[in-house]
Length: 385
Ligand SMILES: [Zn+2]
Image 1 (spheres, rainbow, N blue to C red):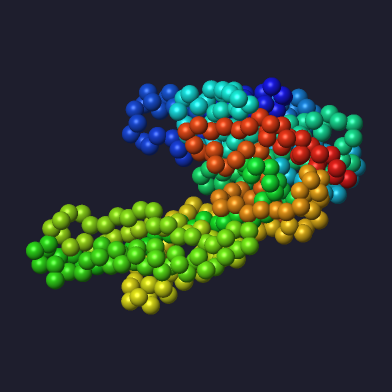
Image 2: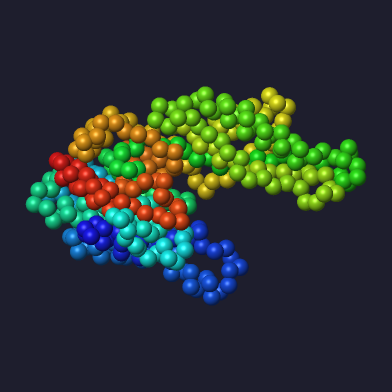
């Protein structure tokens, strides 16, 4: 196995499950104790810190939450810094069975939690930077920073804190499994809650009440048919149409009471330029046209806007050229790139592996893709002034 493959295997064996996926309170104390060590990014961050320090990079932790820190590793140029490139994969993963934290090689693939999402990118990016640090020819005016970010899979606290800390870069390459294509656009994600209010009454005299579940049933139908059709007509060149999904519903308590409340939760995937306020307005207007009404509120911990980076930016063009590509692509899923981009750092997404294997029970990455990813990143970084 190559050094990058070995590094990835070591990373898979150090679980760093986002604590948001920890068993809910009420799990037995023993379970909690057994489970605890697999949650949080600390083991992985400490390990990467020693790898980076051994390669001569300047390292520091940026504390985000108790026991959870971004790992920052810098390669400084000999001359004055004229530009900064940020390599930004996340360190956390979703949860998994115990067996998935034991890396397994089979037919040129490395299996295990995080293999493609996104420890593969972590290994490729850090290894490219370590090789560059040991290379005779390296950028003389470009600073390169590796930032291993916490909490991407939940609330993106790592990228949000980095963006807030006045950190600046001329280009961020956010690590996600893009099959080594350069992504300049992704959809945003809005979680909204809609609630209808009715009037409670005895189930034997429903005519005296107003049924909140019935009104919500009509709203669900409008959202899943009329609204969905309206969204399908609104297409982005790289992303296709925006979408809506009614993901949860809750209303009423028992058969003999007319329900006075019903709520749904919807996931609205947005296109660049769409705002939360705008989406709320168009939903309210659509319902009003159907003589329906609901209270609408947000369910997300932080804004999750869409990403749109101009593919013509000189550094994006330089990246494409040096890895032998001409076009950028769009993806459906939200990631840290939109957070960094919203803070004024032009961002693209790039990494080995395929999102189709992310979050699955049998996550894997092709070792050829991993090695190629490291080589492409090295080639780009090494070509910088
Ligand atoms: Zn990811």
